[in-house]
Length: 214
Image (cartoon, rainbow, N blue to C red; front, side, top):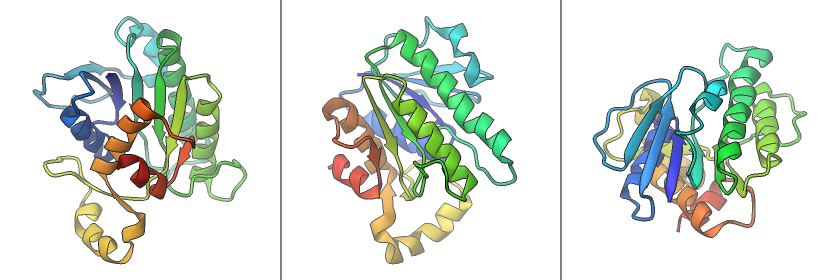
């Protein structure tokens, strides 16, 4: 299996990358991002782009892949809905459409987050935008499309891109909120299993992700 991965310079993407590198069913990982991710892993290739909406300029480099693990994202803090929609909905959809055009048999997995609003009508701005993004991705026509909604996540050993708040507070959360906590090993493994074996739901909450990772 050949995989495209976004968000490797963030905590979730890096954790998923670690799991991909350890999995024998994956022969190649193409990291697509705006910043270089330093690794000497033989499975890894890298494509640096300034704008995810301009992927049609790189069609020959993004063709021939079986899956995309879309882990890139921005915080909604300090952003209005128009700007957050552009960075989340517009860029993600444009990126996905470019991939689908050259990989019609691809499985696309999008990391949104717990409490994402599928109705697109709730009061929480980021949840509406994420829900709109999930819905649009599902309707594009991929072979399979899954929306992962993890809540709290524990980084894997050796990760460099881990926010301080996770390092400090996650041990406490593990004690009191263990049912909503996943390891990034579980998240990555569940993505791989979704591609290889499928899953009956296209929206996966924490318990679904944990189950699929087994």
